[in-house]
Amino acid sequence: MQQSNNNLNLVDVHAHLDHYKFSKDLDKVIDNAKKAGVKKIITAGITPETNKIALDLSKKYDIVEASFGLYPIDALENESMRESSLKFKPFDIDEQLDWLKKNKEKFIAVGEVGLDLHSGKDIERQKTDFEKIIKVCEEIKKPIIVHSRDAEATAVSMLENSNLKKVVLHCFGGKTELIEKARDNGWFFSIPPIIVRNKNFQKLVKKVNLSQLLTETDCPYLSPVPDVRNEPAFVAETIKKIAKIKQMEDIEVANNIWMNYQNVFA
Ligand SMILES: [Zn+2]
Image (cartoon, rainbow, N blue to C red):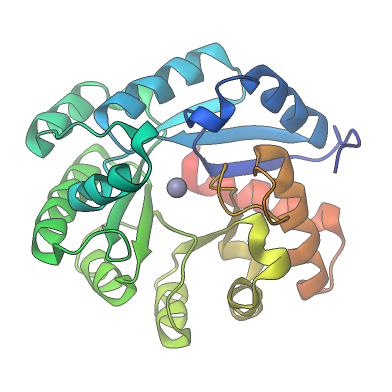
């Protein structure tokens, strides 16, 4: 995983570089990514505080872009009870979306946003907030990076009712018919390195044309190797696995995904 691959153009469209697990060695992590051939990393905020850190990181590192996210509030509350380092503070969604409108030029995308009934329960509130986010995303014309865990069907139907075209379903766990629906809508799926040991992602990649696939890590989560911290350099593992499934060369897959990245985000 560590050899130098500068002739490759790799991209990680969904990372959490602000996570405390990167606080000690982020310079090294970015360096590893560059050595692996990663040319762009989109780091996603999930709260007002992490959005500001994402902006700082995009200024500090040439290959990093910031994405503005607001995670479902009840899911954040529940997760920060489990993992106290998340230090969740409540926020006003309208205020935050106004702030986004003023700062839209600084962000490459909106995400991570969406629904989460795995960590949250209040679907009505999540839907109301997601609807507001979708509206602003339409207004400022940014791609959207969507989380939809255990609420995939609802998220897909809300997106279908919007005017959004540049939709990236991050780490999508929906059933076959929902994959087909999203695919037929022309949306994109970003695939994490855990695909090397996850049959659902392997199945998804078989069903979807390469022109609608992107690579992500969701690091530090979803590592290709159990109990090892995930990092952007590991998108190379996703490329290899997609190449195997599609019976193509790694470089061909990487080039196509780089093109998809430019179509969606440039
Ligand atoms: Zn994420």
